[in-house]
Length: 328
Length: 246
Image (cartoon, rainbow over all chains, first blue to last red; front, top):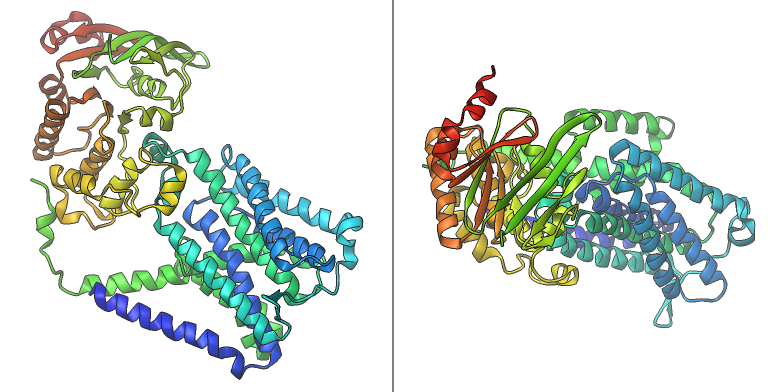
């Protein structure tokens, strides 16, 4: 059974990856742009899924970290630095700021923590808007150049798309490794029962801060890619709305499931484009969908399918008699 | 020198003196029972010893070294483990993962836990523990899918996973049926005998305590009112009064 599942899973994975690689050949530049935006957004959502989905720490600040990454990239690259330097600066800065933002989480939880991170998000937005000397205020920063890789310029939409897709692949592999490592186990323990985890030697303080720092760092990396994608940065996209949107992506996709953020980002980034025909009513359909989904399956789309799958398996006759499990 | 020394430990919640001037020793290798009516301060005492609560005054020493107010995770890594009154397993992790988690922080560094082996080399230990607590048929199941009795066994197994020197068990027999109870007592006695682990057990089930423990401390209204071997304690008029009222 599990071997079939593995085979089916890897076949589906191969088809999806092949589809993602082939996609730009059948798409107009705008389509490629949307697909690139999906890849970039997914990186931020993967980060939030680490913080929220695995470690159970609510954050309404992920959008702010995307903003910090984007501004770092825009500032550095318009001053002639390569994008690689922005990568390092943004990842380290967001990691450190995320670590500091984790401290309130040691004292408050759930919606109180949401409020603390919301305040931080608003604060960062105000910095973007008001500190004109560095961020350009509401006029923003324009002419953000596309990067080049080993001297090869990634100017065309297709080349830049592949660059972002490669980034997504690397981030996914790193996240996969992390989740399956003892750290991932400690994150889940932190989410499910911090008091018990603490009594088993798990330094919950360190893991909480680490969950925030790592998630925020990925938010920063997402921003570093966002800036050269849109090539013009102003404060508006990094308002609280982005944080809420990322939160919704993680929850709709399936919080605490590896593929949750990928699906969630499809719903939030690609679906509006497919629903262009119903443009006026798009938000209406989207809101209705989210409400129905969360009533039917609070664990998101992946949770919904997982439950269907296990239910189907349970209705089949069990391989071993249930009574055997009893302890004498 | 005693393994664990508790000296003049008090814990006040506002005007309520939940624990008041409690002193006792736990010797290496013994099984000490702590009994007392509901609300006599047993669990609060545990939480103060283990750093979950900060005692208002008093001291806790492990091997003569002050550990008062030390964080539970640091204390755990010194070899002091516990179970809780209500069972506490991680429902979304499998039985084996629960056990590995219970010992992984005792090995290596943060970095080696990120880049090293997934199981931190603990699969063998986990399997032994699964065998010992007879959880083999459900080893790959999520802990949340186990029966109450099995979760209780897993809960105890997790406390022993890292090979602790001292284990504090808060009502291990609570809600466990008679066959399971005998099995649990056998496991605890075997670990005590073979691994030389020291136990402190809070329990309401008198039969269980009297048969398991070599010495008993009786708490009432936050104070120790009697201590000694089980037979003496059972006959003590102060103990009978505390349990039956005036």
